[in-house]
Image (cartoon, rainbow, N blue to C red; front, side, top):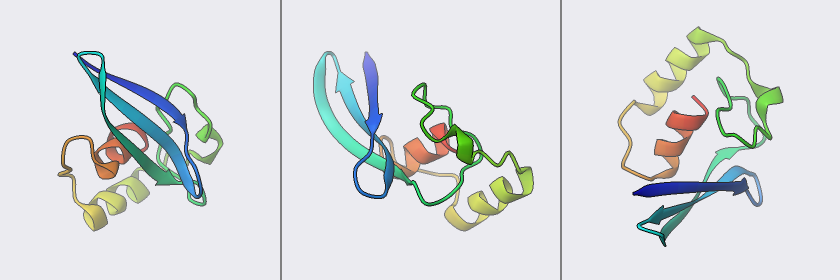
Amino acid sequence: MVRYKFFKGTGNKKYKVEIYVAGKKVKTTQFGDNRYEQYKDKVKLGLYSSKDHMDKSRRKKYYQRHGKDAKKWSAKYFSHKYLW
């Protein structure tokens, strides 16, 4: 079973996520840049929901620039899943 634990990120990062598999921490990743808006902040902490723009055309352009494919548990994976 995979479990994610979210925290406020350090530096310019929005969030830090710790990934646990079968109760053991296997990876820590930081994602998102706190200087920029996102489509919708879906992290339960909701620290950056004030930066939600909800603009579908901006979301589409984001995916055109960055692509939709992301490696499992990468910063891009979490950005796509929880911010865009």
